[in-house]
Length: 223
Length: 123
Ligand SMILES: C[S@@+](CC[C@H](N)C(=O)[O-])C[C@H]1O[C@@H](n2cnc3c(N)ncnc32)[C@H](O)[C@@H]1O
Ligand SMILES: [Zn+2]
Image (cartoon, rainbow over all chains, first blue to last red; front, side, top):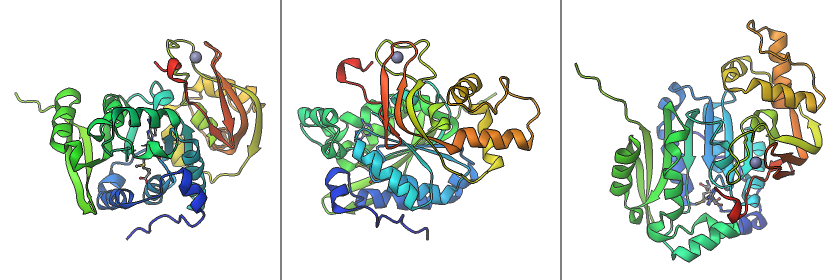
């Protein structure tokens, strides 16, 4: 068992401003742990987490994959960036935190360069306006407000993730049953040639959570 | 954390700013040198990902002239040590990064770059 990162340095004041690791976070850690051999064998060089929040997930994968990987984290919430940074430090993992929406300022340099992309997005179905305002406010409400189907924010990223992935790249996404998992999987395959599998799923209270893993579908050459 | 490795991956992403938007130019920066463990395999693997000219130019601007203008063909230990220092040990704690094209200033505070754009600046 890989230990959960030490978060003892974070206080209730931090969690007033930054998403506190919850069932979704822990399911994410379990999914990464279940893929640990494949992750290591793929010898990744660049790992990028979108919406790193407390920094728990990146610190965890950092402990698994060790110091020969560059760990980039982004979050729209500046407090989250600060927490991610301190959680990295607490767990002796160097996290490069950037306060931005998605991977926007990294897109041109990281084109087809990222080996592991991680995103536990704001997935809770809300009104369109609520998600829109939360994205503008860049506060803790942006941690869950997902708009229509809970997919408003995630969909923006799904449109671009293919451009980040290296040939051997893998993209892990947290989603909710209401997000319509089969539709996400079909769309990513049809529109972006990314095939996917459910790595883990779990019911936690009212939420039925899924962890999806996307990889580039290799062309089968038939003669 | 803004180390030169991160800086080497960041471009201006303001609306309609698509050329000459990299590398961002440091301004009014406060630096800190923090020792980091030397990992020769990682640096060797990472070398092809680096925009060399941008790295050397930026290092010079910050007063570090240890890297050659052209990436050497033969990679020796001394070169890797210098590269390690430039990429991983120079931390930019405060200041800003300015786009050479549109002059947008991205502030850095507490070692975190603020790359957020206002709604009307987003492409
Ligand atoms: C459900 S929380 C997950 C936090 C952490 N990764 C975890 O698993 O505990 C979602 C995170 O995404 C961030 N976020 C929301 N919209 C974002 C966007 N457009 N770009 C980057 N981060 C975003 C939120 O601020 C929040 O920290
Ligand atoms: Zn610009």
